[in-house]
Image (cartoon, rainbow, N blue to C red; front, side):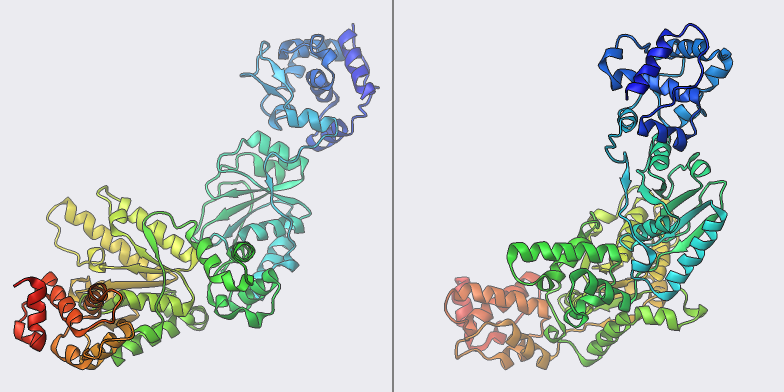
Length: 598
């Protein structure tokens, strides 16, 4: 560094033109000259401005304003003032690459300084990148299907020949877009550098050149002069098209969700286990990012709760799926399996078909032609009286598929302001596609109701909401369940877009006996007659459940008796406003009257 400080002393004491015979021996400064294309004048301007940081003795000796430093160098180099001023303009290397900073617009009185990362690098102290450098990946090390791999290899070969391109990687969050961005950069012998939504472009340019990195930005980010200077940029976009304004060739590449074989390989590699041990977790259509995050969560849970990470994968997958859902939908624990449902045979057949259909969504997309281009997902309608098991069936569907279930909360989705309801719904549908969970619209007729004649603005905007839902439901690439008490209240246009329609009628006598058996705890008192209860009281499963809960409370720690069940049933009739003849309760009428205090 002595050589450089001697150079500063020479510049400060110069009385005329000096020759450029004292080359810098600071490795960082030498590299800056090469990386940023600095002239000897630029180098010395940077050296004088940084001298107070390099050695405290220069804090008083070196000028601090742009005008004074320029006068010093103009005298030393014998340059015309216009030529010297051009080296501090907006497009000059020192300013364009954020190597020199000032406290305002460039002027003779502006105080200049060298940013900390710059003078530290001059000294060989590299504190890292101002932005995040994405972990290195190579294309051969990523789990990809053959078609995706070949498309990326062709794009890399073409861009390498062109030496300039903007890559747009389209796909869902957690689908591996950043890993592929890093692999693209690595193939071009560079690093991938993630930029924030509104980066300082001069600092971004400085860091990208210093680390020989390609900027990775979100869609909508102003690339400015970055691509023109660097030659490459990578845009991380959603699943829909994006417009990139750049004077460079744009290459769009779709990052598809991994198919089952790739998911199995990802899980096996991430957890370090044989594929045979993974079970149904492979059926969850998670992208590479979500798989890695879930595996990490599973290992953390195993460390704190004990057991094998595989035992905690279900919870871990739910946690990484819930993180980004936000408000508007609530997670529902899928507690019921197929064996827990008591429904008619026709209903069961539709549920079996729904499960098989959802499991084959990936294959269906590959086997069908243009006529089925929009049949990307599965929409189900569960309809019937209250308490007949529609919501429970949605839980069964999610559990059998190994997916999470989210119920849309209409109170947080429907908005009085025009267009806001559609925005809330769009966000929920986007998250459902990204995380592959089942969406449940309970009381669906509130949102999917019939369109009406337009009498005022309210009718018009309500119809717009319905039309939006029609369109979004058709293109949604996931599983959706609409549950309603009244099928006739739904807009007929929705029915055409539903692949599964399952009716949940009131249970028959035999089904009610089975429901009583499943709901009641053991042991029961000897006087309990389930056949009689099923024959006399044609109630839905939800009503029977409430009656059983009341009976359990009345019984306390003793076995449930017939009188407890009669009181529970009477309460359900009274609560729902149903008329009931006291004679229906047979010999237990006096027990009921005694409880009522009559």
